[in-house]
Length: 250
Image 1: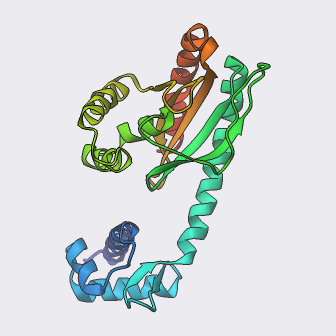
Image 2 (image 1 turned 180 degrees about the horizontal axis):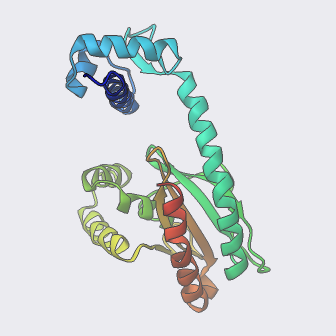
C-alpha cells in the first residue's frame, strides 16, 4: 500500500528548497531578474519558477519591479531579516559584555554588508582611555580586524573580488599579502589590525555566520600604546568564546 503521507512531505521540502534557491539567486541581482533568467540561474523549469514565484509574491517575499518588469526581493524579507538581526545583537550582547569585563577593553559587533563592515553594537571598556565607534558606521574590509576575519570566511573568489574593489585593483603586492594573511586567519581563527585602519588603534577579532549565512564579527580594539601588554589577554579571551558563538548559530 502506498504511503500517502511521505509524498506530500517530500514534495513540500522540495518546494521549500527550490524557493530558497530562487531567493538566493535574487539576493545578488541588484536590478532584479525575469522568470527566464531565474529558470536559467536555478536550472529549474520555467513553469516551476513561475509557480513558486507567484506564491512568494503573494506572501510579500518578492515584488515586481514596475520599472524593469523583473522580480526583486520583497519587503517581508526585510522584516524577517531585521528580526533575525535583532536576535544576533541580542544574543551577542552578553558575549560582548563578558569579553569587556575579562579584558577591560571595548568590544564590538559588526556585520558584513556589501563591501563594508557595519557596526551593530558595542560595549565600552573600563579603562580610562578606550576606543569608541559609532553604531551604524561603515568600516573598510582590508585593514580592519573584523573585515579581514569576514574575508577569511568567504569563498576565495568572493574575497578577492571585494579586496580588489577596495584596493582599486592596482596593488598586486598588497593583494598577495592579504591572501597569505587570510590563510593565517583561517588557521588561527583570529584576525589582526595593527595600526592599519586608524593610527593609534589596534584590534583583534573573529568572524561567524548567523542562521541565514550572513557574516558577522566580534572584535576588541585596543589603544596601540597598551596593545603589546594586552595582546595575550585579548587573544585568549576571544579564543575562549569562538566555539560558543559559532555553535549557537548552527
